[in-house]
Length: 122
Image (cartoon, rainbow, N blue to C red; front, top):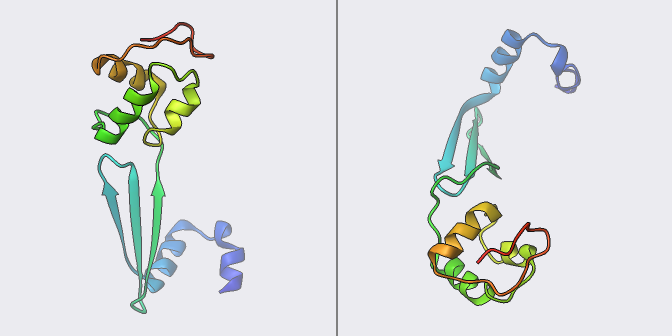
């Protein structure tokens, strides 16, 4: 087995596939919509399962805003100058370009200039 692992990149793809079929029963991918989360289950021929969970980067398309995020924006928007602090208070992966329009939609006004932004958004 160690020899196979060491030489894996030199083994032809059809042979790799046959070797994998000897030890893997199946692989199932579960994607959690709107959470950018994927679970991957490998079921081995011996009946055991291994799980892999990962998050993927990418644009959030119409991902719903949670009430706690709206509350965080209401508390911070008027006076918090740090864009990073605002980003940290929201779901991971929120983009500033989607946060500003959402704050406007909530009717929020900013009284501070935010360093790193070309103008004050409010």
